[in-house]
Structure formats: C-alpha cells, structure tokens
Amino acid sequence: MSTTTPPPPVRIGALAPLTRPGWTEAGRQLLAGLELAVEEANAAGGIDGRPLDLVVRDTAADPRRAASAVEELAGLGVAALAGEYHSVAARAAAERADALGVPFLCSSAVLDALTGQPTDRVARLAPAQSHGWRVYADFLLAAGHTRVAVAAEPSLYWAAGTGVLRDRLASRGGTVTALDAHALPPEALCDALAAADGATALLLLTGFPDPAVPIVRAARRDPRLAGLLIGAPAGQPEFAAWAALLGEEGAAIPFLRYLPERQSPLGARVEAALRARLAAAPSFVAFEGYDTIAVLAETLRAHGTDREAIAGSWPRLTVEGSRGTIRFTRPAGAPVRQWAWPPVQVADRDPAAPTRFRTLHTAAPA
Image 1 (spheres, one colour):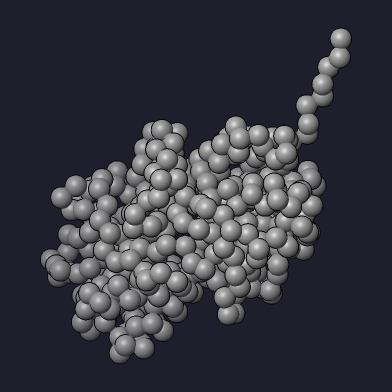
Image 2 (image 1 turned 45 degrees about the vertical axis):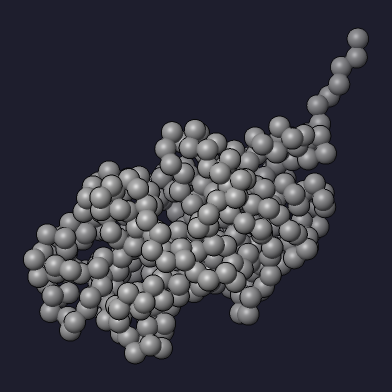
C-alpha cells in the first residue's frame, strides 16, 4: 500500500499587533483579513497544489520586537512577509526585511519613510501618510476650517502628520497650532484651546484609548468649545471600541478610512465573509489584510516562491482586490513600491445612530 506525502506548504510570515501596547483591535481585524484570504486561496488549490501557511508573530507595536520577528521568520524560510499596522513597527520590519532579502508587503502602515533608502523588496497597500492626510486637510478647508489645533503626542508618526497638515493648510492661508497632549491633561488642553486664537477644529494625534477618549469627553463637555469640530485623521473612530467607550460623544468626529464609495461584487462578498468571521462589521484594516494575501497569492502562482522573483514581480502585477484594481508604482520620492492610490475617504459616525458611518468626503481618483 503506497502513501503520498503531502506537498510542503508555502509559508508567509504575518506581522500584527495582537497585545498591548499595540492597537489590538486593529491587529485582530488585520489578521482576520489575512486568514480569510489564505483560506480562500487554499480552497482554490493553493499555490500549484501547495497550501499557503500563515505564520503569525505579534509585534505589540514594538519596533525591536518587529525586527526580531522578521529575523525569526526569515530563518523559518517564509517566501514573503505580510501585514503590520503601526508605522514605527512596520518601518523596523521593512528595514530588517530589506537587509535580509525577504520581500515584505505592508498592509496598513502609512509612514512615508517606510524605509530609509529606496528598495524593491518592500511594497505597500495603504496610502502614504502624505497622500491620505492631504486629503483630510482638503476636507477641513472645504468645510471652512482654516485655523486648526492638533493635540499631539511625541512620535515620528504624529510629527509627520502634523507637518503634512501644516503644509497643506498653509498653502491656503491656514494655520496649525500644536498642543502637547502628553504634557497637558485634558482639562488644561481645553483651557489652552479656548485661549487659542480662533481655532475651529481640534485634531487628535494621540493614542487610543488614552489620551484620546478623555480629551474627547473633556472637549465635548466644555461650553467654551461648543461648535468645535473634533477630528481623528488616524482612524480611531473606525473601531468598535471607540463607540463602546464614547457612545454619542464619539459621533461626528471625522476620520480617514481606505474604502471605496461603492463596493464591487468581490468587495461585497469579502465584507460578508469578514463580518461572519468577526461577528462585527469589518474595518478597512480587515480589507487591507485580505488584499495583501490576494496580491501575494497571485504573485506566488505566477512567479514562484523565489524571494527575488517575488519582489521583482510587483511592478508588473495587476490584481483585483476587494477595494479596487491593485497596481504598484513608485511615486516621486517614495522609497518603496506603492499602490498609488487605494481609495481614500473621510467618514464619521452618524450622531443619529453612532454605529452607522457617513461618508463626508471622497478623494478624487488617482
């Protein structure tokens, strides 16, 4: 009696923040999208009969932990790396992957300088921060907000975002006032905001839940700030924990999300499958995870598992993802291959029903 040895799997390393201080809800959403796409790829025959195997490592938003995970996964023989949400962890992962010659398709991190120097081994699905946050600045300007305050914590990511907003608003005669959310407690921050000269919007460039949630509560309950727009360009209100903690106070806070105005049939099918898997509405991060594996599976089928061949194929790929047709280019000044651009919209939670989202502004097609 003969037995057949099953073919070895094709391994893909997956990075996600699954424990604190990482944003664990985003990590779970990202992982749900990655896993769904792997299951679908395997149901369709895998990679030339070989199953895809997702090898997951928790970064906890820690750059050193992310770099160590890349080293471990490279040693395990993964064909490519996928995932990550936090920009600082993704940057460390991208730098280490490039040094080790492992292709890395970053799902969700947006920091422009994802690597310190140009590389063909790293590609990204999420829009660069400078692109998405310019869209957000345009939304503010169109709504008449030319004098904007930001409550920011110390971080390369938040500093980069402040710079994008300041440059875009300054080009239209606007101003950005920076308030230190790390040094000022929420009530003192509200005092500083009330004393500021004519600011009509406050943007939260902070961690979640602290100090974002206490700042929202303090600002909403301060009669001096009645009529103030509160915004969160980094997307905190997208997640269910935001609504659970803030309820009605968390509504009407515009944020960036990377979803199309209208879903394709594929997008609708993926949305239904993700909703069933998560037992909740999927965020744009879950779709980013799904699209990451869709791209890698197509790459592996067409070009095999050689790492150099995978990285070399990205400029020639055209993949139908859940949010549109994915092609990679290298925009001017970009250090990595980039989907330029995924759909970008500004949305908020409807004050009449905080579990429902409203689309407020949509970026013009690239």
